[in-house]
Length: 421
DNA sequence: TCTGGGGTCCTAGGACCC
DNA sequence: TCTGGGGTCCTAGGACCC
Image (cartoon, rainbow, N blue to C red; front, side, top):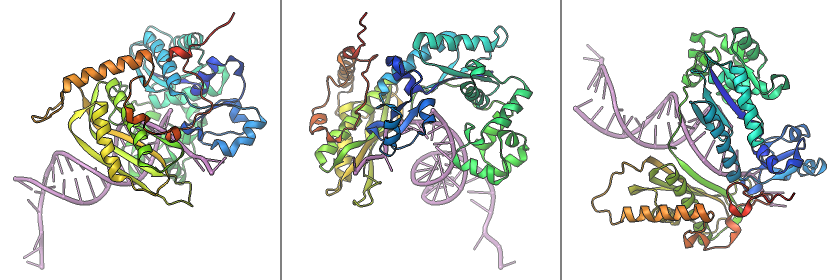
C-alpha cells in the first residue's frame, strides 16, 4: 500500500500559521509579480474565486468579501514543507517528496504490523499539532488511487483526514464517484478524448479492456489504466538531481535597456547557480530568454532565446553569469518593451565527476572554495549579502511586484516573530 | 494599467551509422 | 519489373504535473 499525504491549501495554510486570526476566513496567495491567484482556501472558493484568476479582474470580489491576499513567499513555504517532510521521515522509511505540498509513503513494510488507517491518522495529527498545517491522506494499493483517496479525505470531514481504499468494493465506489478530469495523469487532452470515446467516470475507463486502452492511448494512458485497476506501475523513487534548473519572472514595469536586462539575467543566473550547488551538481549548458508582454497586442512583440555550452561543466556563479551575459547581448534588440527574462541550466551532472579541459585557464578548486564561502556567508547573514555588482547595476523596475509579502519568519533572523505576553 | 513559475516523461521524426 | 535491413542518438513539441 501507498499513502499520499497532501497539505490542504498549502500556501494559504502556511500564511495562516502566522496569522491565526484568519481561521475560517477567505485567503488567497498570488503568483510572483502579484499576477494571478495560485492558491486559495475553500472559503475563498465559496465566494467565487478560482485558481488562475488574474487578481485585477476579481478585485471587486476581494473587496466585497474582505478576502486576505498574500504575495507568494516561497522561502516560507519551502521551510514549512521541510518541517512536514522531516516528520514524515521519522514515521516512515520510504518517503518520496513529490512536490512542495505532497509526499508519497511506501507502506509495504508496515502493512503487517500496523493498522494503516490509524497509523496514518496519528501522523496527520502530529503534523497538525507540530506545524499547524492540516493534511489529507489517501491510502491505496497504487499511487493514482492514493491520490483519489486523499481528495475524498479532503472533501468529506467524516474521514477525519484519512481515506483508505483497500477493498475491491471501495475501489469501485470511489472510481464511480470521482471526477474523470481530477484523475492524476488525465489532463485536458486525455479528458476530451475519453469523453469523445463515451467514457464518463474513472470506473468506466478502468473497466475497459487492455486491448481497448492500447488501441486508443500510448504508454502514459496505459499506466493510468493499470493504476486505477490496482496494479502499481509508478514506483517510489527519490529524485536527487534535477535535470534542468530555471529561474525567470515577469517585471513589475516594462524594461527597455540592456543594462536593466543584464541586472535581471545576472540575478537569475546567480539564483540558478545557487540551486545547482545546493544539489551538488554542475551544468554544461546555459540558456537565456527574453520577451515582451504577450497580453499587449498594441505593442511590438518579441521573444527570443539563445544557448551556450560551457567548456567545462560548472556551478560557478561568475562563469554562468558571464556566459548568460554573452547570450543576452546576442538576442537583445533595442526598441522593445520587455516584460520577462529567464535563465535555464541544463546538461546537469554530479559535481563529483567533472570532465576537465586540458587548456582550461580557470583555477577551479580556488573558485569552488570561494563560492562555498560565499554560500556560507549568505546563509548566515541573509540572502544576497555577498553578490555580483552587476546585479545592482540598475534600479528596481525589473524586479517583480510583491506588495503583500509576509516576513520570512523561518529563514531570516531579522524576521523572527516577536511574541508579547 | 494589471494575466506565474517551476518541473517531468514520452513520442515521432530526422540524421546518422554499418 | 525488381531498389535492404538493421540500428543509435538527438531534438522539438506535446501532454502532463504542482
